[in-house]
Image 1 (cartoon, helix red, strand yellow):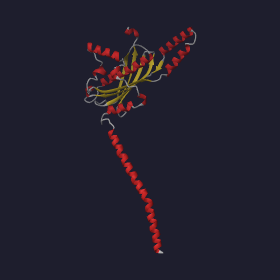
Image 2: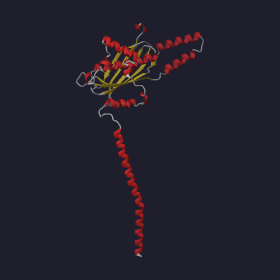
Image 3: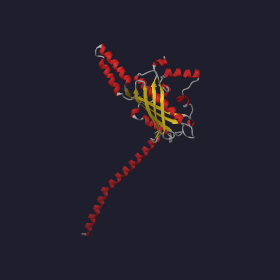
Length: 283
């Protein structure tokens, strides 16, 4: 009787080991597969070109270029020049420089060399202006009326446009890496250069607004107010974000800007007023 019980017990144990054996084998195969996948992933990652460690500008620029709202909006400085004048006008400008010796301060003199503006990338675009769209719809509707009514409507629209306060459309983002030859105190970017950079970028945005609204031939700085919150350090990269806040009387363009570091801290805040020049000044 004892021997039969022993026989049954041994038989059951043997059957249990036979059932578990495939499970152990499956686990081993899974472990091998996971290890192989990890090795393959590591090899693939090592084969992808990476941005050099410490290249703050390249990493930040790659992030900005990957944002959907900036897609297709980067300015080609080699083709358009600092003020989007176009290839032919830029060539004429270069010829005039060679003849008269004049050079643009921010984008030529301050980009000449590896220790001034080391790298720069600019994005510029226009946001939708609902007020202008409504005005355009009103003008289109009025054309179906009589000639006298259309003339009166056009006159009223022109007058309203000249006196209205319109929300700004122009937006600009500029990524700038600043070098050691732009300093005042050792290692700290000169505040005068910061103001000049902001003034020039304000001019970009004001010019885009002026052209979008067909306001006049040129625009000039009337006021520039700069508040320095944190020192800017040589060798660092900063993001300047500019917006047109509003346009008054078809000639006053009000703007604001912030300059931030890679940690998202606001270093500089600024506001500006640009005036659209009258055509007779260029006649």
